[in-house]
Structure formats: structure tokens, C-alpha cells
Image (cartoon, rainbow, N blue to C red; front, side):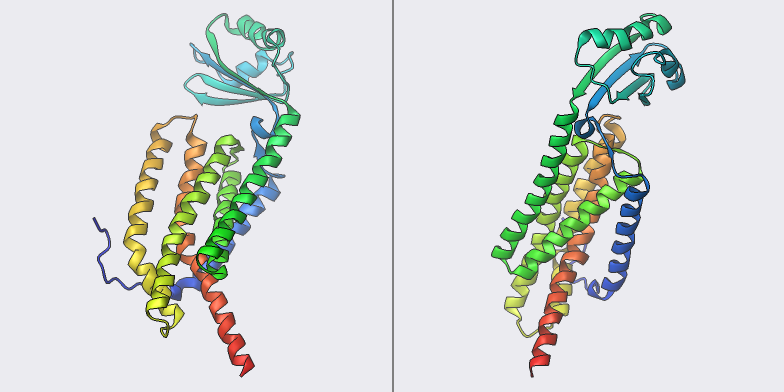
Length: 302
């Protein structure tokens, strides 16, 4: 199956300047959002604390719940609508002890709403565990970048490896920026989405870079700019089909998967689109940049 007919000749390289401006704009907006909000909004996995999921059998509002919990340790907690009459109560307090949970959650809710509710989930993470997990998460992402840089640089050439790794950094930064703009919590689910995006993006990037390498070997005298355009066009049908399939699947998760995985699906949607775009424009731009530097150096030595 081919959505794009063979022999298509789109001048992707000719649009590189616009692509660079577009990428820089997205990165600046994303970083600006993170700075404006004082950093990412860490979830319980990284910040520590407790999440209590409560389902009510009657119509209630967040204000009613907050009023019921006002005199407890949950008085300053964040209360978020999670579904139909279902709420997430987030607090920095640790409710690992059942007695504390009963005194601060069950008793005040029972007094206000009788027994017309059900505590569906209680998650507790200590602050030290959250900080340690945050550090390990950052290390995991950085090590994945370095490992892929080493592999792609060894498998192809250093310029291909650098192009691939910068494309991954580009994708991760923009996805994190989108999460920040939407004021989503940065949770283990978002981290999982970032890891998926890294794998998806490098796979797509390697297919394009490998075709560039093959075409360079077949036609070494052809200008690299033309070779890159040819290679992207040759792999375009595969790229579009693969990315569109993943995108539609994730879109279905976002629409029908419910609130539990909506943030995860959103990060994936952004990552799939940006990852496909970066495979064409960011990775190939770096390869072309190194080639232009090499040619300029050769001319300078003459």
C-alpha cells in the first residue's frame, strides 16, 4: 500500500530555513512556558505525597469536597475532576497509614456525603523516593541519547549520529514544552511517553539516514543536497504510513481511553508528529550542515 506515488520530488531541503525557524519558535515557547510556570508540574511519582481517587454516587463539586476537607490535612490539597462525579485529591502529605487516611479522608467525607462515595485508589510516594526517581529518570533519558549517538555514529558516520541525537533532543524538548503549556502533571506516564518517542523517532530517523548513506555510495558525485531530497522522497511513503498508523492508534487512545491515559496519549500524539518532522528536517539538516562545513574547509585549504 502506498499513499504517495513513486517518483514524487518534493524539495524538502529548500524549506530547511523555514523548518529551523519553526523548530526554534516551538522550543522557545515550550521553554518559556516551563520558566513562566516555575518549572514542570511534577506528579506524585517525582514530588512525593498522596493521590486519593474518590468516586461519588451523587452530583458533587470540587468546592463541596474542599469544604468538607477544610479542617483536615487535605485542606490545601488540589482537587481535580477525573470523570463523572469522580475526583483526584492530591496532597503533599503522606497517607500511608490507614488511621491517618480514615481521620483525614473517610470521616470528613462520610460526615458531608454519608456513604455515597467510594475510595477507588490511594497512591503514596515519599519525598525522598520521588527525588531519587526524578534523578534516575533524567539519567535514563540522557543515557539513552548517548547510547543511540554511539550506535548510530558507529553504524553510519558521526554526522549521522549527531543528526539523529539532536533530532531526539529536539523531540523531547518540544514534547515537554507541550506538556507544560497544557499544565499537565509530569508523571511516570509522561516519562514512558518520552521513552517511546525516543525509540519511535530514532527508528524513523535511521530509515531516512540509511537511505541517504546508500544513495551517497551509489552516486558519490551527486550534490548531497540533491541526495538528501531524493532519499527523503524515496522513504516518504513508508514514513507517512508508519507515522499515520501510530498517530491514529494513539488518537483513539486519547479519545476513548479515558482520563487515566489521556495525558500519556497526548504526549505521544505530540511526539509522533514532531518525531516524524524531525526525521526529515532536523537530522538531515545536521548532516547537510556538516557537509557544507567540510566543503568550506576544503575550499579554504586550496
